[in-house]
Image (cartoon, rainbow, N blue to C red; front, side):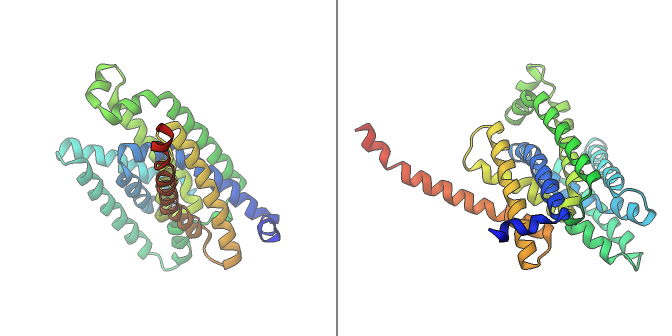
Length: 282
């Protein structure tokens, strides 16, 4: 059992495990609604759209989280402006802002010759460098996301199936959409420190998708997704420690691999249980 305990005898590995676990819980709560509403492209666009803000923050010495939040805010408001004024579809607006912000980020990065190491951390994360301040920020983000998810549960559910009916019931589906976008932004900004802008979408979607194979309700999907995500963080850190691989990429790879494994196991259980049903009925 030393292969399991030895890595976490070091303080930075313990902080990485706690930080990754908090990010997994946050992403499971938000990712479940992203999966239900079919807005995965928004999460991906936000994660890539943060690059300009993080790059500027790194160059100027201000906290990277502030730059990421500003970029994500520009993305959200830009998508809304394009939809209203240019009369473009939702996906088209997101795609245009996604490419534009990513291109701007690359231009900013290419203008600095000493940016290679920082870009690697931005894109792929540095979960092993998570600090106590980062853990506090992630904890606050988790509490905020849980509070909003509980408060808007009915509105999210109704808007996911019938926007008109949600409006008739007074659940304000437009406000629910804005809050959901805010939750996705919160999850992406708070989690990128652990797994980076390119890999945060894997942690946002994969655990929820893996859990969806076993659950039918939103709350149980969130719970199981949080558990799967936390296990992915644990296994990813162990793989990183023993194999010498990048920690953030290892976590994301394990999380994504959990999807086919979970769905295959669920299908196997279904095939095993179904033949018994006619016999029991007889």
